[in-house]
Image 1 (tube, one colour):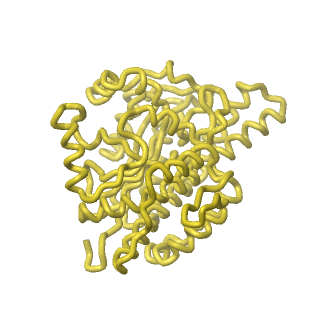
Image 2: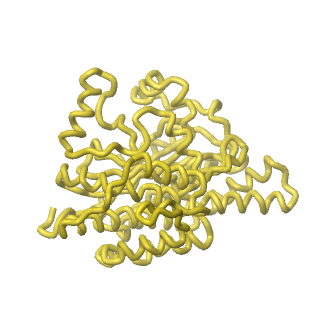
Image 3: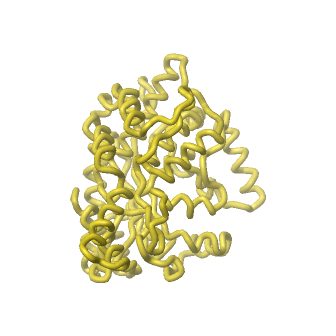
Length: 377
């Protein structure tokens, strides 16, 4: 921590799906692929619960400019080694047509235990997300900022949606991922807590009983990290486009600093009841940016385009501080062209208009996702 406050360093974690380059079906990651990635990236890459998944994590970065270089290296490395096995990664929170019943989980003690503990619920976890860590050294400050940051989680979700299809059907939702993830225990919006000690007591109540091993089994949308002195936002769908990942990371970093700035003036963002914020979470999950969120202060549903402009105004000073104005302003591009869910539906409709059947149109969506993954590399 500096004399000016927390460091607000960031780290980004992403989960990718591996698909066969020819068929575009999901494919298991061969051990040789994981070994080659690990040799080059060390502990910045890891297998995920399902064998068709791979997870990466950036180093601790001071800002998104630094994160960009690391994330580009990570994405390029996974793509390079996947190509050696005729595979290609995509970064979407659900595969458009694959069946979760056909996907075996990774044979590791951690995942075997998870499968035993959560039974049929965890078998459906054919989903990928992105996590953003923001460095806040003081534990109580971490919890205080979490309480306020929860209000903005639906905004971040709305801007990130990338999972409209599930098992070959358009779900009508822009983030079907959360529908699947919320079946797990200890998920959803975090409860309001008064201190880090309260958080530790709550976790301790479960660990002492042997219900969970540690705080890493708390899967809230926002949580104090179990490994690092950070708050960890887990609300977002993973992004096909790297620049959109960086936009969401920059927003998270800037919002956190904006809330800290309020505290230095003896002010704070109003903390609304979880029930109310959860309604906005549902609206973001259902509509993405296509409909508005509720502004509880105004007592009105406000279009996302207007909310996006208000958010950019709120964090303008912080975006200057982190030199990420161009990154956060990508929000305006998303408002014009839509989130990945909109773009995936557009690719599906275009294929159908060209005479493709349902299966071919869904494979056209995967081809679109492959292109987007590599667009910024």
